[in-house]
Image (cartoon, rainbow, N blue to C red; front, side):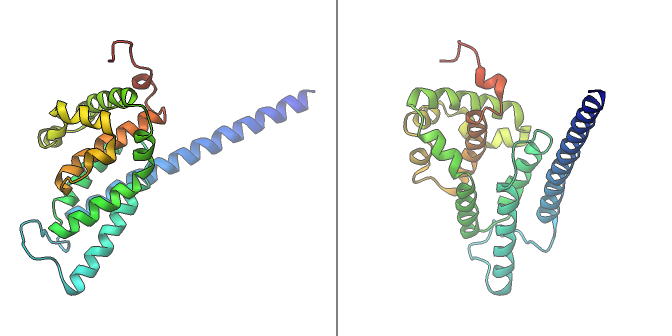
Amino acid sequence: MKVRVFSSGILICVLIWTLVVAAQGYFRGMRRTADNLGKVVEESAFRDWSGKKEEPFGKEREIRGKRIEEVVSDLTRQEFNPDTKVRLSELRSQFYSKLSTGERKVFVARLLEGLDTYIILFDSLPAERRRKLVKRAVKAAREELPPDLLESYELLNAAEEHERIGQTGWRAAMEGKEPDEIMEFLQLIEIAGELIQRMRIPQWEGSRGDK
């Protein structure tokens, strides 16, 4: 009997140790992703095309296209992690700011593809439920985003747009929007998706005062 209890204790300890090691590896991977994206944003070889009327061409266009796909892949693979979430949001905006007009359309479209599950889940909810989620997502974004991003995100203070999102859903609300405008939607889509998945339990449970 004692041997069985001892063996069970050892097994539990090994299981806990395995989970801890796996979690440490996961979050190290998250930090590496943020570091890698930081290098991409800061590298001088990736030129700033934001102020140019023409699009990149030739070899540079090919290289930039691959780089955009790599960045999108890194961003869309990430799960919620408060240690890197804000940093990744900053890097996403900084990277976007260096893209040409055509590249911005591609970048935003690819990011939306990665958030498609969140969009579908949100749009499938009743309008009243969506309104509450938008309200909580806006509140969370104001608490999370750094000051420079807060100042540039006009959507956070657009009460009429919040109502429209709640009434029609993400996809309909974004229809006809320019890439710059859709970039502001991304943060709210992510947070609302996290709320739906109950990854923000305190906010999800909320208070009865939310209307």
